[in-house]
Length: 195
Image (cartoon, rainbow, N blue to C red; front, side, top):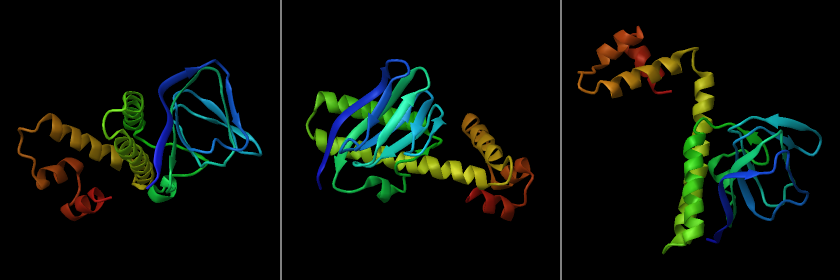
């Protein structure tokens, strides 16, 4: 399969208020992680994308965004014979907000290092990192959607239970104990925990 990274930058700062405008696209796939608020144009109007927003542009789609003030982002321009947005269920040419942007940013940092250093098997490793970035973003969107669909507070409650277990691993954590802490019947606990 054809794959190449054309440019990759981690935590890149541009001039304040700078505008990126590519009316015919860049010819590459472009994955962006905004570190500051951006005005994003969608051919008819603009809206403000908040910090930690992501955008995945397809090769021939207009790219038009501007920093609200400070301009900082992480991004990768790449070519692939497959549309990885479609493969992994990533919104295309639209802003989205995955929950795990720190993990995405770390993968872009690793990509930039690989892009610069070019160790043996660099292309294969770059493709693996891009795929991992796309999968991570996809999973982050599903986590966000799942949390929004769960009964109020349930997601947070399970996260707190997980943290207690990890913080006190020496304790005997039985299902009965967890059900008691969550104030749920065992069948209800299993049902919600699978979500």
